[in-house]
Length: 279
Image (cartoon, rainbow, N blue to C red; front, side, top):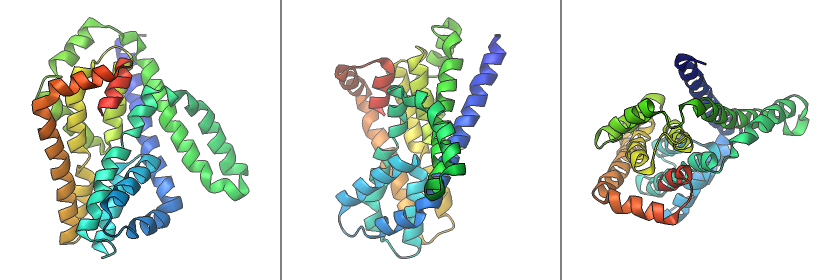
């Protein structure tokens, strides 16, 4: 297989991954949007509870953007106040790390089981038919990640590609690339999942991956920021707070990126696991 064929295979798998994660989030929200909104609206002045709920919901739907956009909508309707939303927004940042851990723990192999299971449940499930599409699309997410990993195998330890990655992994360029990629695809899961896969194949080291992850962290705020433009002032403030919180976190960690990398490496694990842990 020539290089161009491999690149097209990786690109096609990335499109499949993006399609899967978008539809998985949409199907979960279609099943439980009202439930999520009800749960979030019950958060009063307890930021810790809001953070836990934000993390749990984001981990379930695999989209911090969906969680924060729902939150902005609740502010827009007067169900939540700006202050009440802050805990949820912070928690959503924690919940979105699940995708990287799924890849690092090599859970992607379950995709080939979940796809037919979701398909069959969707047709024959009767009482549980509503679970068919979410299972199918979650399986598609895992399966596509597995395809990306397999497609990159021929590039293992390829000096030309490693040299290219090294050239673009220096600060601040890597942060900008992580931000732009996440902004364009509107999903930090794509950026972080790809970073872990590249680490699995020996194409990306932990020190090289961290700046990309920091950029993705900032880029994850753009969907909410764009959506809030059509909402009231308090919703826009929540979107700005989300951006400021994530940007502030990145600016805070940048001067200590060396010691931070050392701490992650001290915890141990394979390169891909360390990248996921850093995220």
